[in-house]
Image (cartoon, rainbow, N blue to C red; front, side, top):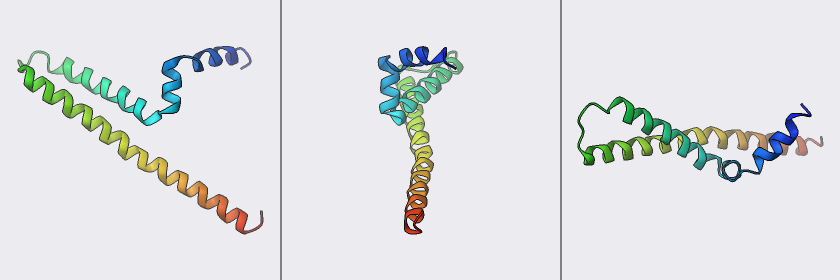
Length: 95
């Protein structure tokens, strides 16, 4: 584990890693949208879509990725509220 600490320190200094640590939902949206758009482009490459149709499909898949990340963030918010409630209950009980 001691050998990993310098490596983790160097990785945390990368600008992309700092962006992901500061804005986890935005970075998750970017990664998910990129993957979804890549799969869409690969699977629909031989369909013969017009440029406007490609733009519409990529826009729709990017927005769906954003909606997915937004829905997942609801669970994060619920967990934060539970933790806050647990700490408030513990302080009310004197311990």
